[in-house]
Image (tube, rainbow, N blue to C red):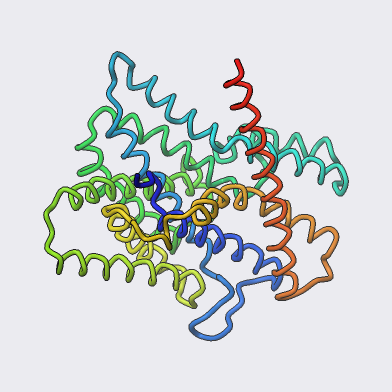
Length: 353
């Protein structure tokens, strides 16, 4: 029986998670983006890996909406349940990261109480609503923006799926991506505030909508009867999109080109999801583990960076990068093993009842 998970997407999920991680750690180690030469950097464009996660979130949201039959439930109830399921998948690692961060504040902070008070809304995933002065976990802006965007988009998908995915999504996403590029020169950083909300929330809505459009096109490709030549051509285009997107992460291209890469990623996601993979290179337990491990690794990276900053600040350059990455992996593994042990215990208790 074929796995419901797409192994290639899981592998890409891990790569783009690492690109974001190395972008942050590289700046910690060198103080700025490091250019090895005109063509290579230490993941100076790695922050654009977040776009991959937004696109996949939009794709999977559209996929979920396409399967839902209201059966008496309202659009509001179905939307609430969808967002709640998303939160529940994130919550264990979020709680772990927040608890460890609180301990670090207690050990290393100058004013423990104010450190907590200033960040309190972020403990409830409200980082980018405007209520928060600071974050417990700075990289969690992506989680908050994603949830806010999905809360707007998912009801639209349920209300009128075809109109949203085939008309609203491509038009609105293009207009918003264009607006962000013209206003900020590139996809904005997480703390830029626009007229009424953080610009990263607009960024999330734009790219998630594009992901919804990707699902609609992917389904049409699945339904089409393609010749072997066309299938090969699509595979070449798909892999070309991923090579361009992956190279951009550690390239020396100007950040203004990140909007181009969003569309390369979008096409790659559309084509990757449009076919099934039987190849064991992608569909195996290790690759599935890497995909699942990406979430705790993404959320726990700040803990490792903080510990190295407090205790090993004398480390510089590539040594600091290697130590921080290793520590991030260890902390994330602890979170991953702990949560899986709790899940097994819950399952065992449920079966015994």
